[in-house]
Length: 584
Ligand code: DON
Image (cartoon, rainbow, N blue to C red):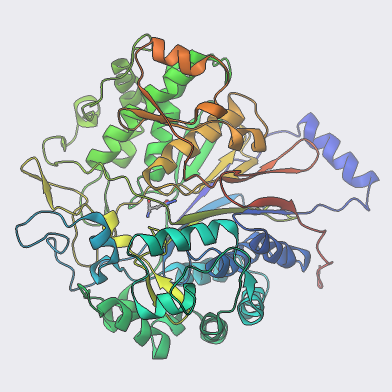
């Protein structure tokens, strides 16, 4: 389940220079870099790199810390996707740790007595939203393939922080208050963890200990992912998912039958680079590649971040790609998804003809029909579409180690604190509300409807980007619900076409154009762009709250370069050179 990147044919000048540099500067050792949503997670990742750990080791250590210090976003109770690049074999692999719906899940479980979808908040906080947590099992699978340090060592930084206590950050305090004010954190265990004795949200700066999480991590350190499918922790998960109100169907048998998978990465071309990301059940990979493919066709000679034409092309590409994504993408183990067709050059050539850069796209763009161009079965009339957009509860981290191996990992509990059900020191996901709440739309079935054992459609797009000669270029990804697709595509365009360094690419404005009006970060947009787009008829809704959390590591001319999203609290930091490895 891998894609192999080509090897450069002949030594390039850059390679010769690098070899000379290595020969004449034996003391200048290569280092790695970790970029993630919290400095404490980055420190844990870099600690593993300094000990000679691989990018995978660092990503795992950082992830267990994020599960503690950023519990609103991701953790042991959730899922994720991981992309890996092996610098020695030049192989790209993809790991799917998406949650499964339990055997007892029903297509109508998010409908009320009259058959109408439940209000989203009710659906999110119901036990029906909880899918089988598979993040830890996926990390263990990646560690089996690419780990260098012992598994148990990777959990130690998080165990220590959970035992000693960590400082609640501004962002975590914000989300605790937000959830508490909106009738969330209603379950006693969640209240006891994040509210004080008077029921007030814990403020920024509070030192919070989580001995239950430390205990769970000790079990995971000893037993691996089995600790979550058998014994006390598994029982606590099931109990919290089945508890009222609206208890769910998740059972021990579901925890035991669900498994992460090694899957074939989805790769495509952008200009002369290659971009690899996740296949279904994520719509992330296909939709990012679709935006990039359409943008490339609309702007054969892009001008830069201040060009109204470039932005108009990005907005059109987004509108068209999201329309296809909403209509077609779901778990392809359950429904036919025309993944390859949607990014086939012949289809993109035809699809792009719908765009006219002189005007704004219509509010509703019909999905395309790849079968009309490529042949095969048309699925256009088969589905009712699912335009779901969701809130904030995800994190992304990127790591490159001293040997050039790379990891791009997006992990999620879906909404803020997931289902807000707390068990054994962590929050359980509400990933199953990523299914369409209603099994049909406009009288037609929805591809992304609930079914037992099915995985809900995701938008997560952890990506690895490669140079024209196949060398590694960058790891990139973001949280942000369905807006992830635009965030990631725009960041790749900013680095490759607009020639921005990773930090500037991450800082650049987002315009999320899936629907009308397009949400735009006005203050971050280069001068004149908003006016230029408005003059062409684009309706822009100013926003100062975008949920991106882009974390990028890119190969620079001299050293690795990082980008950390200023919209969150993360950093990108180079690791100290690794300790020499024995036996080499
Ligand atoms: O899998 C997905 O696409 C969503 N569960 C991700 C949610 C998300 O990114 C919220 N983020 N800030």
